[in-house]
Length: 307
Figure 1 (cartoon, rainbow, N blue to C red):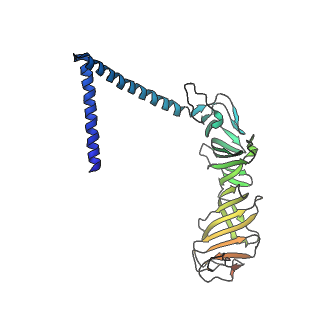
Figure 2: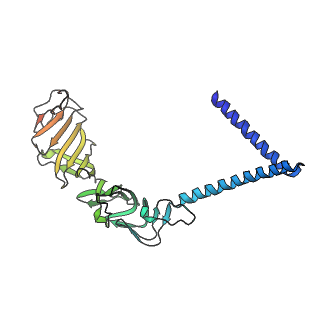
């Protein structure tokens, strides 16, 4: 009821305003009283001025937004990223009548012709830069741009070039990167043949990998296990030199061969520092061994109840 009243009230006010405007136009031509005619002229001039200002404002807003999209007429080198002439960029929008694009603020570039970036063919690139308290941090997302598949070797990983590949740089001294070598791989989707065999585990325990990412804060690699057709899913962790440091598995089936646990929700942790032991978290009775490793339960923290 309240909304209906508001709607009808607004409609009434619009009709009244429209009627006043029409009356003012008529008054300009037929009013005998000069005061009324003057007021009618002033009212219409105000309306016309408001309309013109609105159009100018809309045009300015449109020009402001359009200034984001630029094309460079000469080759650029921005924070170690080569941008050949003729590339299309998205930059920070510019105020004022004469808009000079600041290409150093670009957040996206589409190359006229694909370029080589750290042995990867790149047609498009997105960039996010953060500078604070003397720190410089940037993340790049590269794409082939042509949709074609392929596999490229990047920092020891077989990455699929038909998917997004993430790169990054982080300098606490505020120094900006000057060449591609300053950026390192952060994340990529791995080739379907990617797998890892844990030296301390049975050979049958080869784990297929799907995606890998680098955690800059802890300087380690984290890979998702390709769980398709597997009775578990989880992650494999590597140190900075790509040596396996730990494995976390979550079971989706129970009573697996070699690891008979009557709990499809159990989780398993393995650490290379204790290669002959696996820690299993479950509320059911556990076997003495799982895949040849001695089974232990997690040590409860202070205040926690033992499982």
